[in-house]
Length: 77
Image 1 (cartoon, helix red, strand yellow):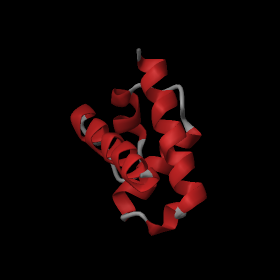
Image 2 (cartoon, one colour; image 1 turned 60 degrees about the vertical axis):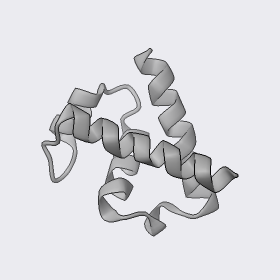
Image 3 (cartoon, one colour; image 1 turned 180 degrees about the vertical axis):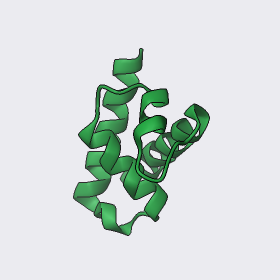
């Protein structure tokens, strides 16, 4: 389940990078996107502990990653 979610997040982030560029994202989302791309195997809790400017709660990490997926889905329409 974690691997599926991570893969979906990475696909969404790559789509955003290819279509609008990660630099167009707010800083918090851009940092999360870059960190997820560089650390696809980490759990949400691990991401939150290691992310620059952290630590961020597991729910905070999940919220930011979910926002990235939503942005990619809405941009793809």
